[in-house]
Image 1 (tube, rainbow, N blue to C red):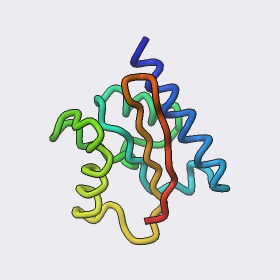
Image 2: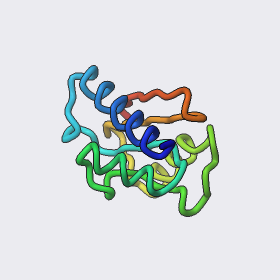
Image 3: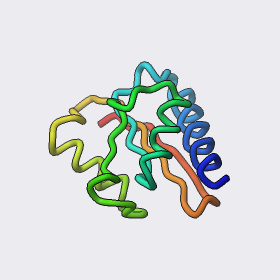
Length: 107
């Protein structure tokens, strides 16, 4: 149940934020979600209809680094030149299943 809740909230808030920015998922270059676990990232990718090759995933290398997971994943993706100046990046997090949020950023 927690897995389904996380996928639903991360997906829904991402769509809301993307729409509020006047964009569609096709406009998004990268999704950098909270790195809780691989299955949640894959579930969110599937619900958003965004291929996993546009989702930054570092959980397999660093584990769940909690509140540091988004900045760590963004730093890794910027350092290896995946995220480039001008890219549209969507970040989203969920904490303890009780709080969640998403931001759309032009890098």
